Image (cartoon, rainbow, N blue to C red; front, side):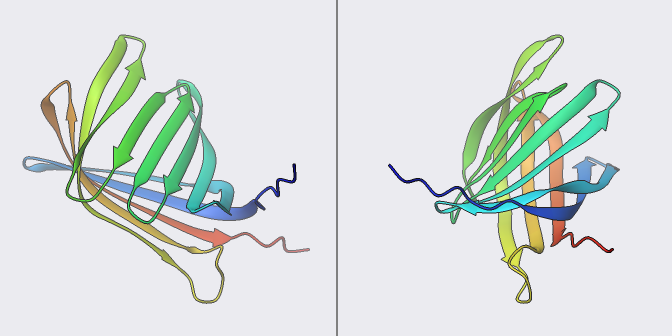
Length: 150
């Protein structure tokens, strides 16, 4: 039984999320470090962030037709994305688990020509929580191989 593990490449990551809800717009930006890897027919971006609630581990899986965001730790969430389809997911909070629904409008991953460990993931979707609109989310993730300077 030979199984070759995929090589994780350290990357610098910038996650930018704009949330449009009626006339209001909120923006959240996070900069940090994580890993990028390709395994089977999926591409993965993994990172950890520290929030007031504690550490949150995030894994983003991207295939040709589908996207998946998994968060664990202080926040537990599962969001699934297929362009022009509604997908069910979940968000776990101290108050209980909530049913969420994504309606993906746009999803693309562009890898850099210079480095396959650099690129941009662009995601636009409507989010409903417990059947009620939570806004339109535009998330972009820029990542670039982190090379140590000595």
